[in-house]
Length: 489
Image: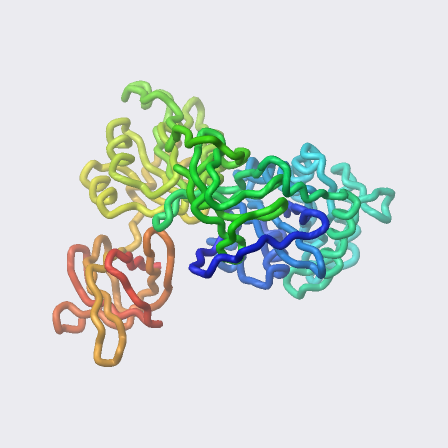
């Protein structure tokens, strides 16, 4: 959810019945996020690395006089548990199937999750702008083989042809969601004891532990002491899906909670608590093996990820990787950036450090270089799993792979033209004139641009190398801060 400094809204919008919670399921690249994106009128999909949604998002939209809460889930097979969790908290499921591609492995898996959760299905037959009538008929036949009998073919499951690109059929899909939810006769139950579910959680560099929760029953209020699994805390702030601070959240409403002592486990039930609980901040997956044991059994890995949901999904995928008798020993897994302690543990056990969507601190990077520890963070899960498979097979891809050139901003200077120049120290590689770069601030990408000027002292230079200090001008302009990282794309 976006961050906000907006004023607190003093009320929760209520209706005669609570908003239905709708999970969006389907195969990768079939348009789940694009469809939800069109409904929300924002560009969520464009912000995801590689176009893949890799964490759950919960959003509330207005459809006429009704509110609908959507849960988006990743399509990659490694994120099966996240999809299962999404189905279990939902009232109904939208199964997105690309008309021009048909039923695929994750489509079948999504159907199984929906059936196991006992939620009704609505099929969104997406990409009809790219498909023929014969394609649509073929998909319906494939669905029938998976036990999903649609309307018009002897079944009761509604099918709505849509195009996430043009918006065709989207109003009809929302209307169908409303009709199905009316049949469910959902009750608000705002006065019931609190019951909410953790959809996702992360460790924000700026705000600390944050959790996205969906209120099922009762009302969650600022100032209350709550617990979720082994994690407790006091609600300091509630932020809705539009970034607004609210004082309370009622049934069917997704909010981000600030105040937990640590990122709570995904899927945990949030309830009111009389006091804080002890927190297990990181998960030790195995007792530390001796060097000889680790050589025999496989690759020792320390895993870091940006959110609890991603951590769970990536860990499950890594544990399936095997080459003969060798597999992966997950020594430690946790949420947050890769630090010095991770490097020391990897060094002591002959292991490597794999990160998913997390930063590697400069101190940890230097320590890893000094100790000869392989460390790398990946923005897309495919790259991480491919690297892990090669490592288990005996390759040394982490050491052999060239690091992206990177510089740290030490200070900023304003030119007579008004342009802001970053005074940097190059940490690795070479940064050249006209390089495309990304600016990373506290683990998050905040800007993209091109290098339009490089100076060492007063001299213009075509490139700067590891260890050199220089002035860097990036266009379009950007307000650099001390500590920012400039990384060549």
